[in-house]
Length: 493
Ligand SMILES: [Zn+2]
Image 1 (tube, protein in one colour):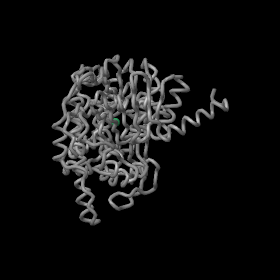
Image 2: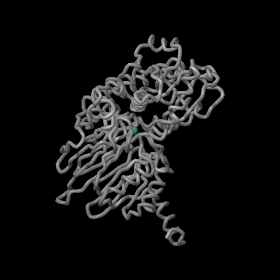
Image 3: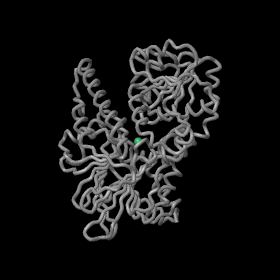
Image 4: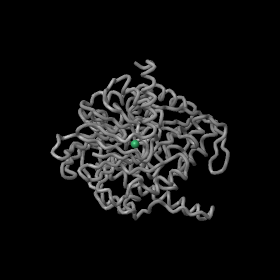
């Protein structure tokens, strides 16, 4: 088996890993590079570190755009094989990719008009359609044959609805069967709506994410008291609660939690406006596949003939007129709107209309990247620039970090600890420091004897059944040298 890491190496976007088994080339994820320098992201999204025509199969771990966002471009550049994922991932990817194509076209037209520059969209809605038509779906635990000696099984990753851990069982040239596991984004236990991540019990090779390898998350249960206090205070003073929510998963989780707190009598049943066409489209997919919700959702809602996402107080506002009408609503309410980082979409209008009133609350439930309007709000800047106007920020701002959909330091280590037979671990999808922390913790806390690599962009490995061979990247060579030196100086052993 050969591996080439073509994205999400020491960063968290652009997930793309190429695996070759028995001459079959399998691409794990085809994500978009986001954030950072615009030119660099553009460059990495325009071209792949492989020829799309030579890829035979694509596997998608889940529908987040940093895992599926470049699929239409892959097809545009000549990929003609099959794409496999779960049914939910296919449906949500369809919604998100069409939106991505639409945004790119809008940006293109804006730049053409205002700047005279014309960076072509990376793909069109037709390319999205062509890509989605190549997708075939398999459900969790349904083992399917990919090629001679290569079998795939998806297991629930518990990260977002439809997310999968990919298990590849393969045999090369009369050798014993071996197993490669790709975690994709690994979720957490006890998250609303989602099943806990499935624990794979054995594998020789593991490709694992490391987004929060040095962090410990609060549990959602531990923050509900604080959440209720904050919201009840706003209701008493007659304010509104503005929630910037990512359309996929976070919005549905917030709605679920509020519904639960309403049912428990811990919050007054004030209206909840979900004001985002994209969130509405995705909530519909959730509802269609509600059989995949976890057992707590069945216990608390489904068994009582209640729908966690559709109930009396919730108003999904589709049209622009409905959206504008929210401004005229008097009295306390929740307004959940996208985009999550407040840089686009209808949330901008709601912030503009509401953040100058000290009675109101901005409830932050997602990560706000550097340089976004959301980050300015979290940092408590006096004025927030919206539509070219400086709007004074007088509303209260409360941040809850418990909603992360990624396993934290202990959850990652626990996951690895429960996998037998590991010979090699590749660490991906984490900032440089997070990758390094996970590698050091695997050695120092778990005391595993297997090889652990923090991979570089474009780094290739050749894994033979007899042992593990690799081409060392420059960064790894430095690390190995440093460790040898430390050992010599007896600082480590
Ligand atoms: Zn994700």
